[in-house]
Image 1: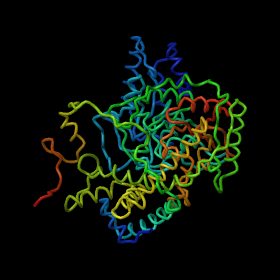
Image 2: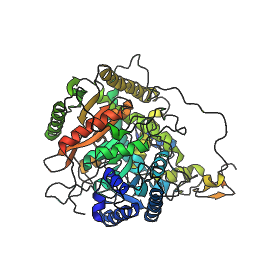
Image 3: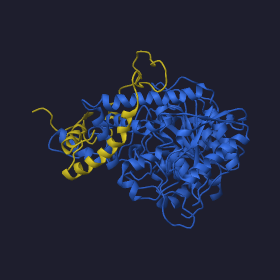
Image 4: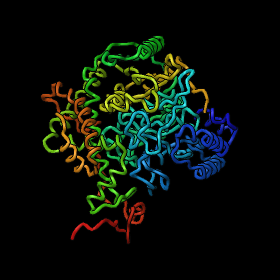
Length: 493
Length: 95
């Protein structure tokens, strides 16, 4: 049975279609894997075994009745940020203690209506604020990857650290994730998995706890490019409940795989060659360029002059939006309540006890930059800089560039409890230096594993596309994947 | 620009987060590190640049002006820490 969990979504789908095994069997295999791995990896904060078996049974009945959906019987993990009806939904925060929504997010509803099975809720940085999954109320997630010859635990990246680790440790066939500054692509790169943040507006944000509404976007983390394409096809939709959901039909992304990249113009932005970037990252980038050139793509140097300002602008815009979005957690309507001497004191005590340090820090920054007298100097200026960042990309695309190739992260996975990162919040923020520009401009970006560093840890390359041209990203990432091969963590847990 | 201890406490109050003196002192350092980092935005020439207000250029979606949801009072208070007769219960606000 344990070899069933080794199958990709595409393989399991095709085998179940042939009747090789049932969804109940596949689901049981995953539940067994979770039971043995989760005490070590800590990827799940809630395992919904009974619900999973019920859903699997119903799925097998649908298949028997001849009405199988695109993800029929495929067991998935769901990031704790997504509302799941009647099931633990806390954004891995203490402030949402006991919250079980009476509604289902649009993205997860799409997955279930295509036949998928929910295994449970996945660990993450609290309210998706973090790059190491260490800000979770439920403790850090352990990366299934370890450096060659070392027993030291590494972070899986964040904020979708539980999603990435669960996929890499074969604790689910695929997972939902979200990305506000790099939270899908950075953990995917750290765990040898594939993650795509689609164009802003491609997936509905309805029912996903809001962090920074103009930057948040849902997407999948999967074992390979094909599985990511299959999952995004199901997750994406046009939704009346989200006014930023764009009225464009969802293509069959899997059909884009195998297409030729001959003649495709791939931009290489010089500004992504940053000071202190490790040699192996530069080497990986050059390798990616060589692979795409060999496949017939045309490589062109491009300029994105405002790149270095994306991260500082992000650390104004995202906290500002967060301070507003997180105002709702006040101990009145859901979650934690800490009594106080009056209602204002109750709010203050509840929020003091309910939010972790990183979340408080960002709410404070956001409140400050939006406060009277500072709005123009910080928030308005940051939004203008954001226009300039977007314009840089638009000019590159107008000059005929089809996609942009960059490293996904400035390093491989680092140690849990890294002192230098813990003592300086800005150092941790630098993790998102290559990914955050994409959120600022609302573009699609995919992270695909491309090699191992000298310590034997996975590294990813990022492809950035034109708005709503995810198909180009899947096609191009698939070419990189074919050249690089797949990378699997050696089981030690 | 940087913040002093009094500003940290004022902002914490605006954000409705109780802070001890010790926490406020730690936050002062952290917030100033972050504000120091974002300071580099002042080098950018933003004259005549429109601030970004919409990520994707699109017309605001409208829907038909009809009731599509409602009558869910029990669902709405289901997760409340304290409720009575489908009302949220909070400490006394008006004397």
